[in-house]
Length: 88
Image 1 (cartoon, one colour):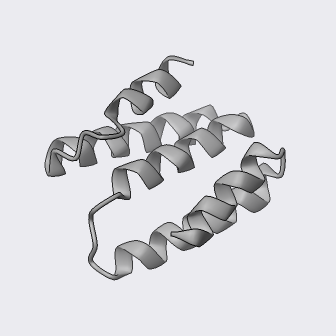
Image 2 (cartoon, helix red, strand yellow; image 1 turned 180 degrees about the horizontal axis):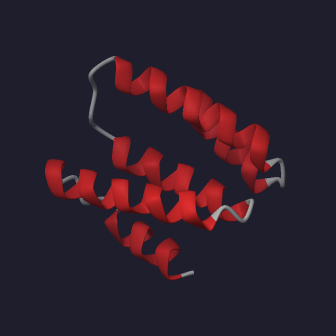
Image 3 (tube, helix red, strand yellow; image 1 turned 135 degrees about the vertical axis):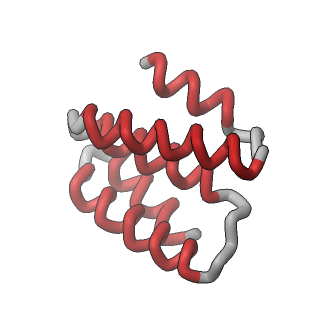
């Protein structure tokens, strides 16, 4: 989780490519544990990072994955943030 958060922080600072690498690595490692709690929020951070570097296709694909994941798990805590960022 720390790797994901650190990667998102890098993307926020304008170091998008570096941040994306860390977010993807952290998300892959987290999902490898079989844990699903919080994955939707991490996907939203990943999509936001894609948007920050101007990769709107991957950003939209990741938003769609997050939305699908929310529907599957019904973990709706971050759903409003998903729609807010998608709207931007």
